[in-house]
Length: 122
Length: 296
Image (cartoon, rainbow over all chains, first blue to last red; front, side, top):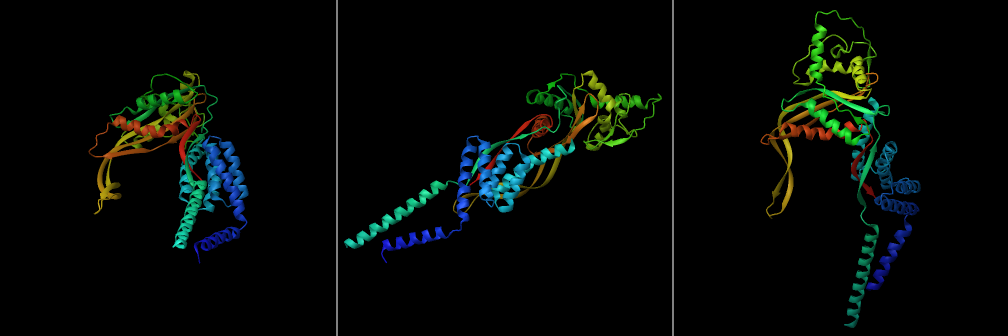
């Protein structure tokens, strides 16, 4: 078997593998595009637009933990702490072993607990 | 011979194409995470809209003799409130609450007939008993319940307890409020005490292996350490009614190695620095700065 035929076989295998992926991959791809766009605008300080994109991402793919994490961060930045908690909870439910989500959540909890502590007392 | 050379060239082209493809995919995807700075807005715990002015009255303070915790706390809180809240800070003499309570207690136990006041204990949001609107003639020592011995010097937390009744004395604080045109009153207790401890401490130590490579390993060592504990309790009182609106207690400590000689005052400021954002978040909108990780 010459090199050219090996290459053809390899590429054909990759093509088959890609086409065999479930239809969910399309949803994940669309959601990923929304997430990437959201990250881009968040870096430029456009957090409301980022929220819109990440909300769309979780709507398209409700099993996408990273999108829920990003949404939670954006809610936190906007002071919507209850929504942030829900989004973090969902992200951790989907990906409980993700250390970055857990780290975000711990930092969020510190602020949220402090705020709730005050509200409970007043 | 020519065929072998052609085959090798094909292989090189194929490998180069594959490498380029992998590189293109990697570049398109980028890193999977990105650290981003955020600012979380915190709404104030108290509704201070009825007040235009704030009086940081004074604190029942004790502990280390090297720091006048009453003076320093009042000064620090006033300067923070001036720059970080909408309220106008009243410049008044710092109230020596410890002396005031002791003085009033002496008057209370003098052989002058005092009216007996029956009080109903109602728990306040701050967790203390309150004398809901009962008159006590503006006597801070008559804060409520049976009289307790007042320690002249505050050395530990239990010494502060008899003084706590002062904050439940609505009549006294109402009188102070009237004097300053009904401001929000900030008072409380501050205990700043030296602290020593010994035990195992984990710290990172740089080690070198047989090949001269450096690495950091956690090492547990027995150490004697000294430092300070700061236990403030901030009490927010409505100057119009004299009632406690809200109170919160904190505990912070700092420890240094026993060889290090850190002045008490700088430790006091180091510990207060940690608490100030919490204190301010009771009165005004604050933004907590931090970083979070965004994921792809």
